[in-house]
Image 1 (cartoon, rainbow, N blue to C red):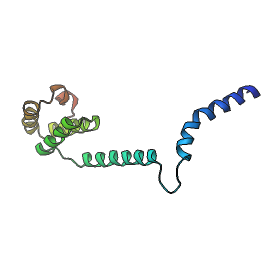
Image 2 (image 1 turned 45 degrees about the vertical axis):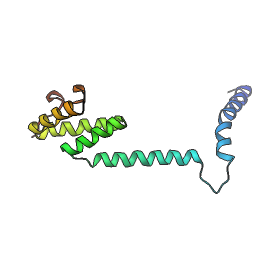
Image 3 (image 1 turned 60 degrees about the horizontal axis):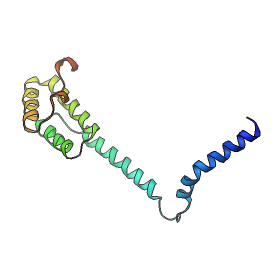
Image 4 (image 1 turned 180 degrees about the vertical axis):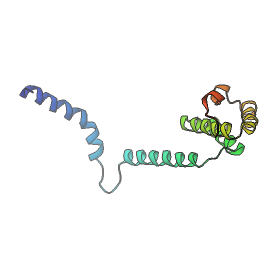
Length: 125
């Protein structure tokens, strides 16, 4: 790379990084940076939610609570976990699945498109 190009490249990089480095350096060193702590809090919250969702079992009560959480604060992760739980219920106990899915559809207005069907779920062995 010619000298002039590398010089302009360094200047461009320095200008792009200047606002970020100013945010990181213009603070007292005894306090954590607010952006870093907000990011780490968000990551910790996401891991906590994922851990809580993973602990759910395919029961009517768990699916009802999860659906109410989705109504209050929509989340793709929650919707995906509800789909997984319903698929597990369909695979293991089709009669209970019909009862729970029908109730979720009627009482909580879950759209039919958000329910698994027999074609998308492998049969229990």
